[in-house]
Image 1 (cartoon, rainbow, N blue to C red):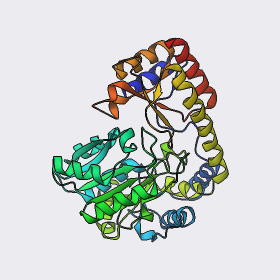
Image 2 (cartoon, rainbow, N blue to C red):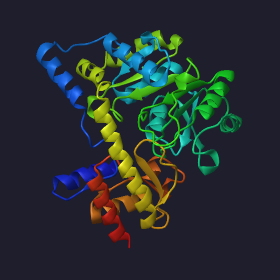
Image 3 (cartoon, rainbow, N blue to C red):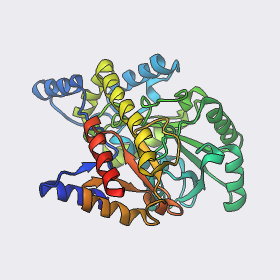
Image 4 (cartoon, rainbow, N blue to C red):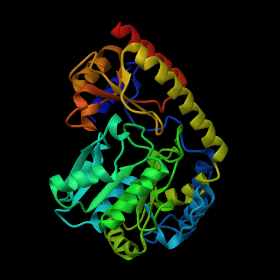
Length: 369
């Protein structure tokens, strides 16, 4: 956030900043989404909805699982949330008790650790890397339980931030089976679904209806500022989570819910956006190693390159600040994602335009030569 704040300040002062730091699509919401919102503003009274969301959107999300994954979902199990961030809060509050241990990967999305800690839960960070295919396994969970004590929950993202790791269906099923056998709640973060470039994209719901899935319209659907997401709940969690959701948020914004229904009809536009990410990905996979940044993890999904910067620095935070100050390129230091090894890594987002990626890479190449 310090880097982002400085990048924003420099942009306002007229510096030609290119941000490869923020995990936000450069493309705006699809035209169908904007049109639906405009029409709603002219014709409808925007108000509270049911705590779990408008029935139209819940039903549309359930249809998406049927058509995209071949998985049947009762719309009653769908909870519409104020972005995936609210989904994490609701999931942790509903599924766990204070003091429970929840396993996450390291490197991983820092908000997991921060939210768990703020809610009085213990984040058990399990290091992953090339030897573990950058994902969790039953063996790793067994080792964590032996070291830390009983694990109450597991949260896994696929595709993952910052590594881009896609956990395959077989590995995902093995994890879920292990959790079922040991009374562990399995939470699946699927907010980068739709943005997979290598390997099969599998929802945890294909393996079990006892998992809790969190997703969002922010990434694939380019709707970050609309603050709208969803969850698929186990049957037993519906009523408890509904009560917590109503108390904390009343409901997700109705305007965003109406607009989100239209997002599923923007297939052609969203495919074009994804093609842009694929071109950017190909460019970064070639140019970053040439500059001196070795790709640290597979870029199989999402829109991030997680790189080893140890050729240039042992302090990725200071390196990122200096790079922003001297060549106006913003990137995210790895320390956020990995408090132990992240001082040697950096995350580059390639969610911007191809021209921006080319310019940023050219600046870095000249600066580091």
